[in-house]
Amino acid sequence: MAQKQYFLALLLLPATLQATADWQNCRGITNDSERLACYDNYALTLDKQTAPPSVEQQTAAFGLPKQSPAENLQDISSQISRIEKTTHGARIFYLQNEQVWRQVGSSSQPRLNTGDSIMIERGALGSFIMKKQGSNRSLRIKRIK
Image (cartoon, rainbow, N blue to C red; front, side, top):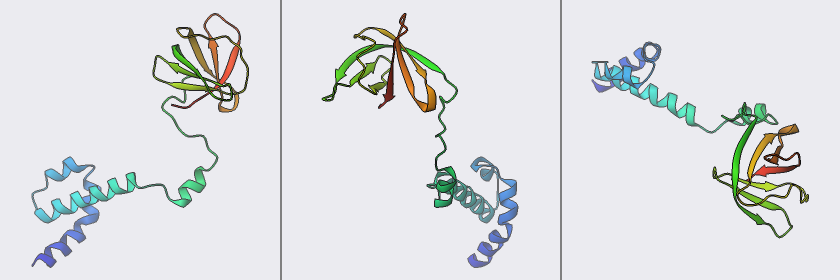
């Protein structure tokens, strides 16, 4: 008897898939087999959405820039809360907004100190530039945290 109900649920599966948009629609189904099939289909949909990308998907996306919620943002402002130097002389900037940026290159300009207000702008080819407020001098940087 259980096999017959399961088979019936499989026959109703395509209709159930079309009729249900999410798990809340499954709750309204009174037939136990149909409701179970609805929940199973919803779980399969979730599995497909959270599965790691396939090799084909990765190949298709190779070389494209990653999508970010901040992709349309052109600049940010903050204050420097701390500056450290690496063993190679590059500066690491800890900002009040909890971001951490590392200097790219060896320039000592602009002179930046703890408490300085800065602006970070998008540069060419995906780079970023830090400027001290009120100064024209800039520094290439890369976000590390």
